[in-house]
Image 1 (cartoon, rainbow, N blue to C red):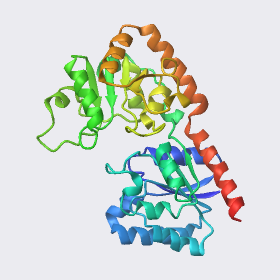
Image 2: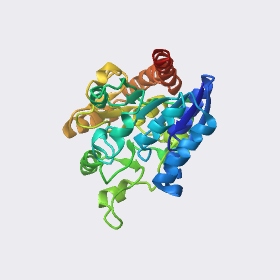
Image 3: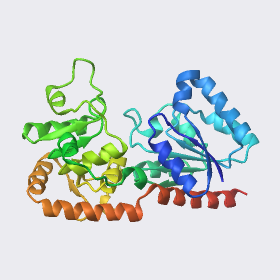
Image 4: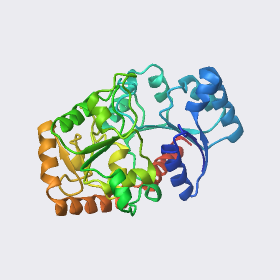
Length: 335
């Protein structure tokens, strides 16, 4: 199948993993980085080029990831002259702090889709009410990149800590900032990696104290996971259903012990205490940290079981194979 993947690609993350998984499944893929093109050409120019790219490549399938700048009327125009199936895959429970369907322009884009996927089942149900075929499809690990790595003593000292958090802080991330501040107040040894969205000169002292000044991606993220005793997560949103972040899959694939917030219905895919561990409030998070910092054997056992689980059920190739089956069914239905 000829596929156009409309996805931010500058960070060499999601677009790369989806692209390579599709190639492994014998599909032919071209990437359209709508975000960077938007920066260069603006909204009108990017949408015009999106139409022209379909005229040139004539893809059987277009997968849109995020795609905030792509207009619904652009898809409608393409559909008039091309037999392209359109899929939207949403990786966020909130977009700029809002419910996805409340974001200007996003609803009209989603309404043009043949298939809609989200990492949050709450969003899936709301989109289904619009009469669009919708399905929960979470992100996944990409083992060639997120695999467990062997590290040496200097790498352990450089990246390791009792607790590590790899993710953005500040801005809309009030919930995760709150739990990280509590961990600071409790006096734990921990490190933060990731983007900082506090205004300049307004970074809290506790963030400045624990932040390494770096982001960690790919094999460096795996190093941080493996060299640390506990990898802390704060997945999803308050009402997000099975809204696990990519961090969960990357951490487990790398062999890390993952302690994260108790996302609604997480038991559908992972068993707390077996594949990972969860907390429902700050007090429980502190209790679990104390418990597992003192129990290396339990940490290692859970980490190994979690790694086995994601490698057998939650890889990017498995996700894309599932999506391709759905697309084939949709094409057969509409033909």
